[in-house]
Structures are given as C-alpha cells and as structure tokens.
Image 1: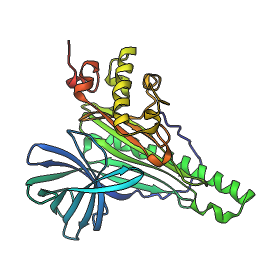
Image 2: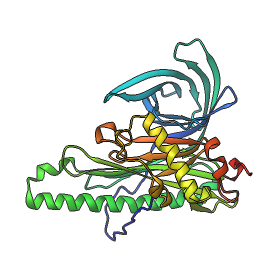
Image 3: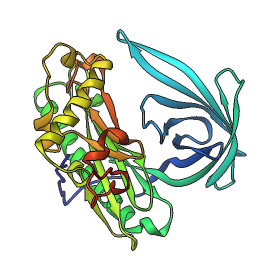
Image 4: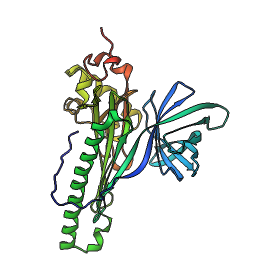
Length: 342
C-alpha cells in the first residue's frame, strides 16, 4: 500500500532513536524455525512469536527477563469468541541471553510441561522508536544486524523520520482546530503513530507489516495497515516488491486468491463476508490494495477493522499457504523457489 510522505522543514522530534526491543531468529529442536520479537528485556517482557511453518497470528509472549539475561517467556494464544477475549497457554521458552543480548539458548516446553525441546536464539535486529517532542506522535521501525542491511537500515531510518513529520503535523493541526473551536483539554488524548513489525527477514527477502494508529476524538481511534516487502541483492542494495512481483497476474489468479482469502475469512467469522456484503476481492487484489507480506509460510494478507467486519471484531489476518499459490508464483520473482512449473 502506498504511503504519502510529507517533508516538513521545521519539525521537532527526538533526535536519538531509542532501542525498543529485539528481534530473534529461533530454532526449536534444530528444525522448527520461529521469529521472536521481545520488548522490555529487563524485568517484565512481552512480545510475539511467529512459526515459519504457519505464519499465523495471535501468539504472544509474556514473562520476565532479569539483569543476568535469564528469561522465562510464556507463549499464549490470544483469540476472540463472541466479542470476548480468550487466552490459552501454549508453551514456555526458558533460558539465558548473552550479556550483549545478541544470542541465547534454553528449552521450549509444552503448556503441560510434558514435552521439552532445546532451542537457540540469534538476534537479527532491534526495533527503534522516535517521538515528537511537543505532541503525542511516534514511529517504531526495525534496524537489522549486519553490514548487508546497511542500505535498507538507512532507508528505514530516513522513512521513519518522514512518517514522524507527517504524524506530528497531523496532530498539531488537530490540536489547533480544537483550541480554536473547543476546550483545549479535549486535545490531550490526540495521538498518531506508526509501528512496523518484522514479518520475515533474510539476506534475500525482508517484509514488514506496519500499523498506523490515530485518535482525534470520538469513541475510538482508527487503525490501518500497510506492508513493505524488500528484495535484497548480494551487494546489499534493494528494491520493493508487491503482490504481483511475486505472482503471475491474471484474472484467474485474482479470482483464485479471492476465493482462498474469503474461505478463510468465513472460517474466522468475519461478519461482512458471512452476511454476503463482501463476495469478491478480485478488484482489490488486482490493484494490490490489500496489505500483503511475503513470509516463509506463503502470503499474509492483513485486513484493518471495518474492512471485512465491524470495528468490534477487530482486524483479520489471512495466510494463503505456499501449496495453494505454487502454480501462480512467478519464476522470475522473489518467491521463485516456491513455484510449481507445469
């Protein structure tokens, strides 16, 4: 999804990007690959875990990390049923990080503790956060470890500053409108932010899913998503990639994808799909207008609140697996190794 970048000549923001968390590549039992993002690696910790094999959503980490790097992170599945949140304990990561937090190892245990497996962690990046000084505006973005990512890191840092300028400008304008027309106290809750999470990372293909949240009055804020996929070359230079860089575009392909996505949304009880208000997504897919990340499991499509259901139902994530898209994959694209050639 395209993002409009505003260049503002005079902008006040925090000059230093503060480390906000760490991103690890984990391997359980030498064969199960996961991507773990952890924030607050001192005392209380929380984050997310995504298994390469499924690319699913809803798995979070909650636990502790002490000053010596010893951690215990509970893996929990968060879901909603009938509008009520549900949390299920699915496993526990327990071990020790190195002094510089660049690696770690330990044991993964099932929720009942009956199955245990060794696992290792290798840090592949850190998240940074920059904030405006005078209004509630912020951007969180990744910076990856290693010289191979130097150009991409520079691009992400510069883009984050542009986004922060845009957010701060928007919040200031909202503030000025309120001060002119209403009570300035009403402004205190106004905020706008972008938070980019890493969906996949390798020396060839790295994908981000970014959530933009804003609140400028009313019953609730608004959240939208956009995706950034980067194909990296051997020299560290990169190019952006979208859905149709990875797949062969045709009416048959968009219809096939639409059917696969809608099938999953029905299983997830997305109300606008169940009611028949949404019966086809071909037009949106043809325009590459649905945020999609290229992940090890396949293609991950993200739908914001209101897109396919009511606001109360939240956002929806649909992962179309590699086996379902194998015959659609371009042999000259970033997913070429996943193609099935007739």
